[in-house]
Amino acid sequence: MVGAGQLARMTSQAAISLGVGFRVLAGSATDSAAQVCAGTVTGDYTALPDLVAFAAACDVVTFDHEHVPAPHLAALEQAGRQVRPGAAALRYTQDKLAMRDRLRALGVPCPRYAPVTSVAEVTELAAGWGWPVVLKAVSGGYDGRGVWVCQTPAEAAAVLAHPVGVFAEEHVGFDAELAALVARSPHRQAAAYPVVQTIQRDGVCHEVLAPAPGLAAGPAIEAERIALELTAELGVTGLLAVEFFLTRDGLLVNELAMRPHNSGHWTIEGARTSQFEQHLRAVLDLPLGDPRAAVPCVAMANVFGAGGSSNGDPDIYARYTHVMAADPGIKVHLYGKSVRPGRKIGHVTALGDDMPSVRARAVRAAGYLATGEE
Image (cartoon, rainbow, N blue to C red):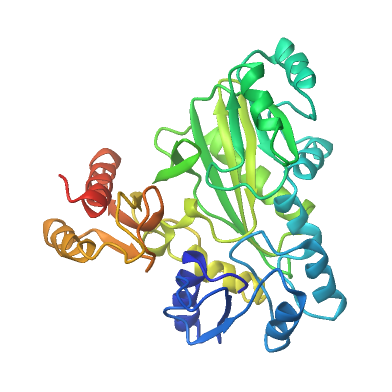
């Protein structure tokens, strides 16, 4: 796995139980996965020689992020390496404008959008769409970065002043944000997890509720159908996460990710097969696991840094003990990251029969870990 963040860290745990030899290409020995994975290689994913040397010792190369340069991916494939998902599929997570164009060509419902290079173009679009207008970076954005909700032409001008390629998108009013997580293998076997609701703040996921509470069967089936069809149409091998806006007129696709995803962390304890095991099964062309939920209700809450320094937050482990004692059913996952305000440093999961109480338990535990406050 190229990349050694928390996704690689949790994938390494799944590899152990499968008996799969697992290596990560880490930028530093302090990276989240590098701290726990014996097969750690230190290198630069933007340097082709480092990628080539890493891939030479692997049967399959996969990723915990979308940032490997596309020409490097193509070079690995031309050298005969198994890259999953491949460069042709990953293009649609690396270039969001290309993704929008491809989805529109497939007839997949999305927000209205257009490439822009000037304030005049944004203002002209706003005349039809109304303000605010969303400007998105064509490449490189994640977790709310690279997305600007502009209320005025002046705010749009400030964004366009940066040397970043952007496109404009209408600001969508929605009832809920959903995510559908599916997997596909080279043998074209596919599996779909229950559709979940994600609770976002400032473009960052804070909670995931599985299955999405109150979601009617129609939109749930439609979300799974779109995700499964996209795995085939885009040639995805491994996991595909599709983020949706649920509007009064139906579903709109917001984002795609071709790797384990924050919306699937609940599957570690809450599904019969975790997303991390499923991704490994898919990219290794093993039979896929059962994606069904193991309990009626699961809530996942991210733990965010509330302060601290480069030395981390030593008090978090004292709070960790309190969380375990207060609620023995809570499952805590910490990523070994130094604490910075707003940084994801872990997540907690609660399981049960009643979503409001399960959600309250998860939110309480995550908040206490972050700040020590009830």
